[in-house]
Each structure stands twice: as structure tokens, then as C-alpha cells.
Image (cartoon, rainbow, N blue to C red; front, side, top):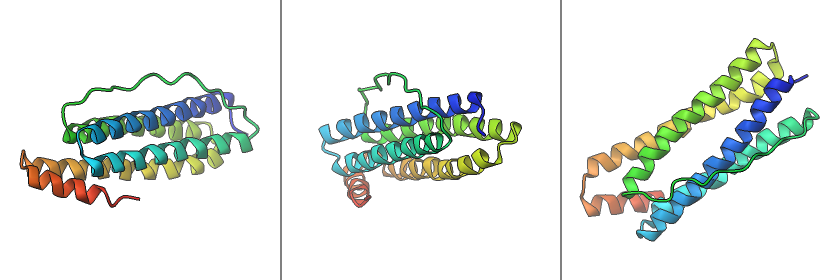
Length: 162
């Protein structure tokens, strides 16, 4: 049985996952507005992935008989300086999410809730990719410097994400 404390914290994390999606949808809109269609595609895919994470947590709590409490979603940042900056902001955001998820996992372990810890371990592992991918893209954009052709190649690469 999941504790009320842990269920409430996972409900809060559902809110954070939805916020992440909202943030990435805003980033997609910005990228689209500066004609970086690949960047926009990457963020639209990320938007959908974050909503899937929220849904996975929602389903878990529902199966545990918990009514999920949803809070308001605050507006994400809307103004950015460049396409590459989007990935710097993404990496910082994902590092914060990693701390939240690790905290949930730690609570589950402290409460000897092995079932919830096992469920959350998927998210702990997922966060490795969630941080590694933008870090890799940042490296590519840093190497590109201000070279518009190199950024165009990165943009074309990001258009392939499904």
C-alpha cells in the first residue's frame, strides 16, 4: 500500500511532468518562430513524451486506488535568445526533474514500498537519457559555434526524431 505522503508527492510530480511538457511546447513554438523546424520537432516530441510520463504516473496511482490531485500549471518562459539556448535550459530543467524523481525513489525505499520503488526505477533510468540527449545536442551546437550551415545540419538531424 502506498502512503499518503508518497502518493501526494507523485501527484505533485505528475504536475511537474505536465509543466515539463508545457515548457517544451513553448520551446517548440519559439524554435518554429525562428525557422528551426528540426528543433521545433524535437521539442514537440519531448512535449508528448513528458505527457506520457505524467500519464504513466497517473495510471500507477489510479491502480493503487489513489485519487490524483492536480494543481494549476504555471506559465513557462516564453522568450529565448537562440535555438542552442533551448537545449541549455532543457538540460538545467531535466537536472531539476532528476532530483525530484530521485527524491520520490528515496522516499519509496525509506518507506519500504518496494513496488513503488520498482515503478519509479524506470523514471530514474529514463532521466539518464533525459539529461544525456540535450547535453549531446549542446556539445554539437557548441562545436558549431555561430556557423549557420552547421546549425542547419543539426536542425536537419533533429527533424528525424519521431
